[in-house]
Length: 202
Image (tube, rainbow, N blue to C red; front, side, top):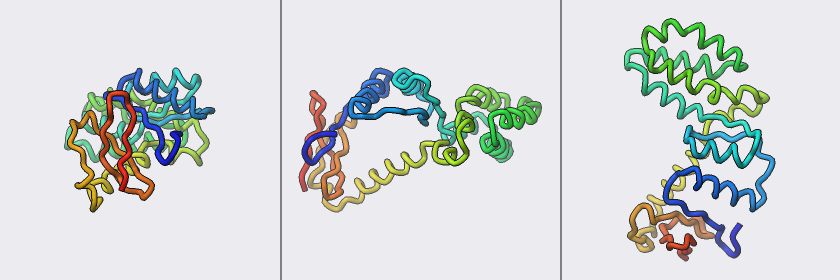
C-alpha cells in the first residue's frame, strides 16, 4: 500500500501480458500469496501472467463472458435454446456431467449452430474448471460479475458527483485515472509520465 492518505497505483496504457505481469508482481511484493484460483475473461496475456506468477493456479474463464461469446455465434432463432444448453452445461455437478450434457446435444448443435458449438468446445474446460472446487465456492468464482458491478458503481459515482466539474482535468483518455479521496469522492486526476497519481483534494 502507498504511504499517507492514498494507495499506490500502477499505470499501464494497454492490456498486455507484460503489463499484467508487472501488476501481479507488484501485488506479490505487497504480500499477496497462496493464490489457487483466478477468474477472468479470456485475455490471453492475463491468463499467461497469472499462470506464470502462480504455478499450479486454476484459471476459471468468466462464465458470463463465455455465454456472450457463444451467443454471439448463435443464430437469433436458436438463442433461447442455446440459453438452455448453456444452463445445463455450466450448472452441472462436475466436469464429467457437463461433458455428458454437451455431448447429448451435439448432433442438434452441429445442425443448427456449428459456430457456437466450436466456441463451446474451445472454452469448455476453462469455463467449467470451477466444477473441480467444493460447491460452496462455485457461485462466487464462476464469473467476474461482482468486480464489474463494483467498477460500474465507481463510474456511477463519478458521473453523479455534484462537485466533480470543478475538479475535472481535460486529458486524453489514455492519460486519465480515477482517484478516491478520503471522503469517498471520485475525481479525474492527471497521470504524469513517471506514473504517479496526483491526488486531488476536496
